[in-house]
Image (tube, rainbow, N blue to C red; front, top):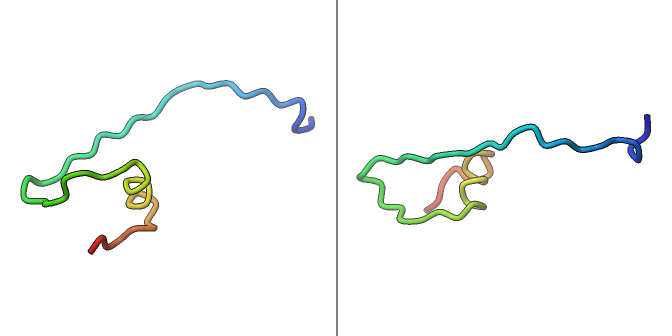
Length: 46
């Protein structure tokens, strides 16, 4: 089997809901910022 013979099939979609404590002062986060937080690239956003 070669890469040219492989066929992609979508079998599902993942969704993420983010909940924060009401005292958190962050008003908005972009998808890229959320990705950075969940992948560990962002650990401090001062």
